[in-house]
Amino acid sequence: MEIIKHFALNFSKKVAKHLLRELAKKNYKRQIKQLPQDILSLQLELSDIQAKIRILEGQEIDHIIKKNLTGLRVQESNIIRKIENNQSLLKSYLKHQKIPETIKPLLLKPKPFLSKAKAVKSIISRDWLVTLLLNVFLGFWGVHRFYTGHIIIGIIQFFTFGGFGLWWFIDFVLIITNQYRDANGSVLLNPIL
Image (tube, rainbow, N blue to C red; front, top):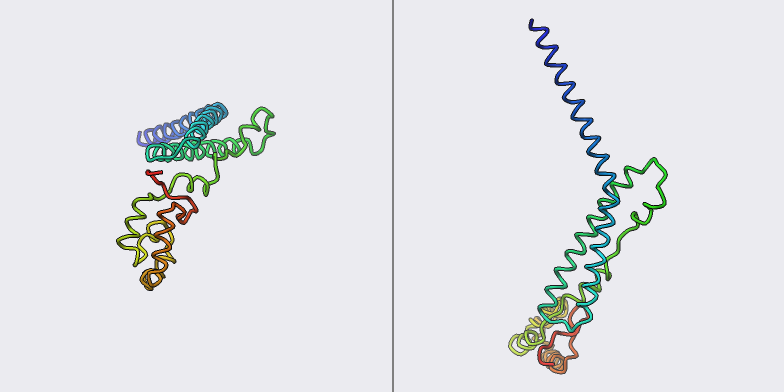
């Protein structure tokens, strides 16, 4: 009797494993068939977000637009990551098969609207008034240089007391005339101008 129970239990485990494997294969095939549509819808969503980015970058940048751009950039990078993941799944499935012509455009690598360096430059810029106040009150120690990303020059100014006052004064004039640039090369955001 024990042998029959053991045999029946073993047999049912094997059948259950086999059924689960078959269900996983069917589910995988269903997912693979759905991948081209998913990639296409993600590409459409990506182009919509990039159009919004284009519109916002055409406007004068203020704090609200900066936040919107940052959010859109995050969405853009998340969608690009999803597209690349789906493309790699599809490529691995089609590895040993001839890729149909209709699927080849879906396998092209998606590109962000701007390069990362330009995106950082357009989004991150320092405030003019904060830089001016830091220069006036703490400029002899180069604090405004640290704030704008000029770390090395800030350290030098810290130890030379603003280049013996001369460097501090030159930075003051550059900030007042809105010629001072941050480490990215961007002009400071000036709410007055």
